[in-house]
Image 1 (cartoon, rainbow, N blue to C red):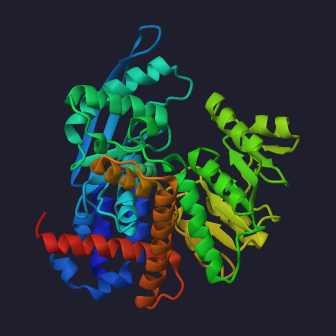
Image 2 (cartoon, protein in one colour):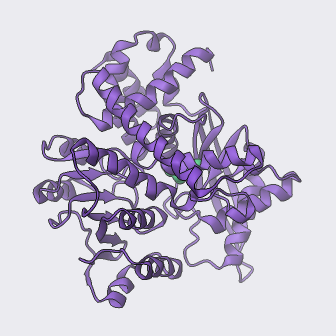
Image 3 (tube, rainbow, N blue to C red):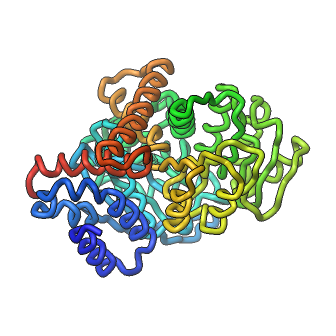
Length: 450
Ligand code: GLU
């Protein structure tokens, strides 16, 4: 291994011994950019790696709020502003009970390279809280969001840092957060938050963007192999915003999601989630109770397998993990390899453990695509929302969709080219890491010490 990478990895482990998720992504990225680091000895003198693994700023704060029974609660809020060399910090907020600083640092680190891959002028950040909106009333969610923003507002702004949604933060939460920001600031600085409702400055297609973009990326992968998405069967995990977008776009293009998994087990619908009735039912089911997908099986008379994930099913063409981090471990990876399915397209942030990823990459018949590239359309349309807000204009669905296509095709092509340039062949993971990393590193070199 390159000695510089080895040293920085050791130092990073020593400095952050308890941050397992953060160390997982740092190892994955640094090891895969080795050919780039070998080709740029000047990076070591400029401490590029040391700076890459150290956030520009870590903000941690107390959020005190009151529930419907007038009980006080205290949660922890975070914003990790990782790297703004390419533009204002940009990235989502995650509200979930398992969120801690480690989670936000891992997501923030990934966001830097994802945002760089979009070729849009945005840096990388992430934030969130260990508050979960699940089971909370609208009033409770609003009071929490207002309390959260009452602290966060001083750290963000359209040219500083523009938060958006992520797990547990959808249109409702963004609305309350942005409303409080506007109230405190006393002005309509719309570009300070993205993912807003279209009624309040949001972009058309933002809710669908991540899922749609993942399917556009998949189309490029299939095209490379002389194939079409039409007729393809997909197995996915997650049926949140992203999973739902995949189902909808796949159906529009003549493919179908025949398996999807939730926290309680997985659904097998051989006809696919293709009709409006089914797609709408999923939206309602999720709004009522995001922890159970079984009601879909009850409603449409299909199979539900309790407590299991759908990795390893054979009667599909493509797997797309779109739920959460480390969804696919070594056991699942072995089942995936045995199934004979050729495409493993990551969608959720870091859905595969590092050992499972290494194992899958080593399987000649499996093509692996990385989440950093595949899910980048969400943040891209967020940036297009910032652009629309700055222009004081709304773009049409056609305009936004055309940009989405262009961005996702560019990301795919840039990844292919970067891997080829460094003699790695057709390697979409290393290609994406190198293309994103190089853009950030070069911008840092231009800006001197920061
Ligand atoms: N949370 C999303 C992501 O992981 C979206 C971020 C954004 O729109 O800023 O990229």
